[in-house]
Every structure is written in C-alpha cells, then in structure tokens.
Amino acid sequence: MHDHLRRIVAYGLAALVWAPMTSRALLAQATHASQDWAQTPGAFADGDSLRDFQTRLRSALFLLRDRAEAGQTLRLSASVTAEGRTGIRRLRIRNFQILSDGGRETAEFELGAGSWPSVVAAMGSAAAGDFLTQAAIKGIPLDELEVVFTSRPGVARSQGGGATVVYPQALAYTAFIVSPASDEELEALRATVERLSPVLNLVAQPQDIDHGRLIYTQTPAVREGKTLGGLREFLEDKYAASHGAKPPEGRGDATPRARDDGRPPLRAHVKVEGGTGVRNIRTDVKNFQVVHDYPRYLAGHDLGAVPEEHILGTMITCLTHIYEIEAARKQLALDSLELEVAGTLTGRLGNTSAPLTYKDIHYTVRIGSPESREKIEDLQRGVEAVCPIYNMLKNSQPIAGRVVRGPYSEEKEREATKQP
Image (cartoon, rainbow, N blue to C red; front, side, top):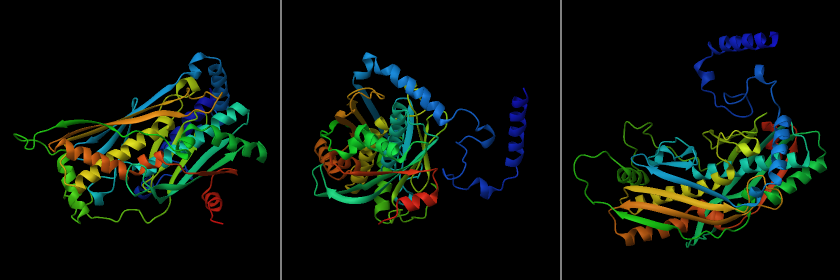
C-alpha cells in the first residue's frame, strides 16, 4: 500500500514538474541518449528488466523447439499505396502502417522516413533482436542492449538492367551491451548472430528477385465533372519541383531546401526496452520513430512489425517512390499506384535448428493510367534498373559488426566508428 501511494505521489510531482516546461524544452529532439516520451520514466523504472524478458523469451523458444510449426515456412508480405494528391507511400504490414515520405524540395511533405533510412532501421532492429534471441538461447544475461547501424551511399552495377545504381553500402553496426558475460562470450554471440540472422544474410547474399508482375488498368485521359486533385497532379508538382519550381503555396514550407545528401552517414539507433523486448528505433536526420516487437508466441506483445517483414516493405516503398520519380521525369500520368511484396522464410521466427533464409521474393505492381500499356511497361523496366533497395537486395555486400561493452553514449559511438 505504501509503495502504491509512493508511486501516485511520484506521478503527481512529475506532472507538476512537467507543467512549467518551456516550449523550447518541449521541442527538443528526442534521442536515446536522453529520456524521451516513449521510454519508462525513472519513477517507474523498477519493473521487469531485460533479463526478465530474456527468461520469458528463452521459455518461449524452448516451447517452440519441439512443435511441428517451428519447421514450417513462414509467409511474409507487405503492401504500399501511393496516396493520391500527396504521393505519400503508405506501407501496410499486417495490422500496422508506416509512412514513407520525401522532402519539401521534391514536392513531398517530410511525414516519414525515406526508404534508405528505413532499410537501415530494419537491419539495425534485426541485429538487436537477433542478439537478444541468441543471448537467451545461450544463457547470456543482458542488462542493456542498443544497436547503432550506419551506411553510406555507394555506386554499384545495377542488377535490374541498368548500368549503375546508387544505394546504401558500407554497412556496419555497433552493439552496445551491458552484461556480466566475458568478452569472449560476447564475441562468440556476435559471430552467431551474423551466421544465423535472416535479415543480415538477406542483404549480405544476392537474392533472386523476379521482374515484377504488372497489373495495368487504363483510365480516362480526361476526367469528367469536378474532381479533387489526385496522383497525376502530384506528379505534375514533382516534375515542376525537379525543374526548380517551388512547391505550391499553402502546403507547408514553400522554400526549397537542399536535401540532406551531403552528408552524414545513414544512421539508425535501436534501443531494446526493458521488460518488453520492444525495439524502439530512431532513424533519419529527422529522427523518425518506428517500433518493432516480437509476436506473442515469442513472449512479445505484437505491438509492431518485425524486421524480417519490414525489410521487404522497404523494397516496395522504394520501388513506389522510384515509380513516382520516373513517371514525373517522363511526364507520364498515373491515377493509381499500388505494390505488394511476398516471400517466405524457411521456418518460423525463433526456430534455431538451422539458419532461416528467404525464398521466392516477388512483387506485384498495380497501375491505373491513361498512358498506353507499352509506356507503362517501359516505365517498369526503367524503375527496376535504378531502384536502390531493389538492386541492393539483388546484389550482395558485407556487413561489419562490433560489440562495445557498456551502456550507449555518443562518445562511445564516435570512438567505435572512428576511421583507422
């Protein structure tokens, strides 16, 4: 009873402290280096620990091990819609939705992370989740776990039919771990993660992804009656923006700005939260937040997608964006644009008997347009030739990983990523 009263008083005091905060403090950028609204306030931090979650995860993994379902293939899927007048890419993964968007200087709205920061976020979350899973299996207690995943743009030969393409390369992660385990145990843990992680291996090994299936619907060249602006008007704005025109007045900041291409590395910061195992991800220079969670059969609460499906979603959000860019560049009118991706894993998440691998990754694109089918087919070939994430997954590249002992800090991150 006294403990309950103490919590109520602490909560009330926290509310009184919060009230007089200045607007400047309220607008401060949230990072994992400092407390943010999504993390547990100190007064309530004496609940379940990361070790407690590991205990539940370990029990769930051993229960799964002897079930027939563990060896059955797991179907993964995602879909993306280019939203009418805004062109925003709305990614749907099961019951979850994630927005992907671009900058104002390209007639977009900056409402969500782009595909490049999103793919780095998915890889960072996958690494964090695999460290947690493999540590639970090996009986290695973890008290804190954060992962920073970085990348820089690089040029490579296109696997989609073009000469060259630019996509995230120089992939590297640092796992910041607080644990009583020895350095040798943590290094062996890292080697196990890199050997068994389906997401890291998806990127590190070339994938056989077929040419997308096109479902084409011809729409009227001239729309009758009064209609609201749609995707074709968005593409007109995008074409104008690419030729130096300002975005239309009344839609946010109309002053063009240079893209953040110049360029700190792509970076995602993943914090595994205490007793839940939820991965709280910050990515992009705008510090967008994404949440990944374990399914219930792995002791999670199913509060977000898993990286194994999110990384497939980033491929089609990227394809969708390139369809928009290429259609605008060629001044092709599109009235609807939807993509779906599907693939399978060779076992269920949590199956530790053999490395899980992706199979049969394929996508479908549905396009409504007044243009001829020949022009749309040509558009599709051009998109696949230059789409960054599509080509990134069809190609292969190494991923460098390291473990740093102790809690995360910006100073430790700078030291860990210092060039030799």
